[in-house]
Image (cartoon, rainbow, N blue to C red; front, side, top):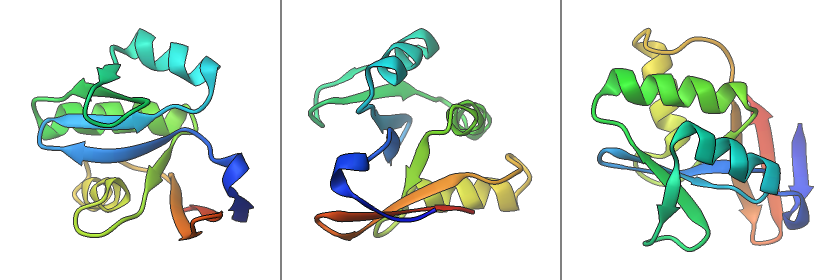
Length: 114
């Protein structure tokens, strides 16, 4: 998909913290879908919502549901959501492509289907 401006940022998985998946919903319709899935306001990161996943299998199931909604998985340093998605896919917990989002600069994002 390539580079986009910061004004075109879609909803994305921003963090995977221990047993929590954190999503940044920038779209009101996506916000409602996330709430229906059980996501709740996450107080640590402003405007982010999280859901608890006790096991890797549960995380993989939630990742698949998020991917099926078109939600992106962020790149980052250390153990990013996109790296976790690829690890689960390599181990057979997930299959198929997903959308990866990364920042080329503070004003430019890049979205690729991997």
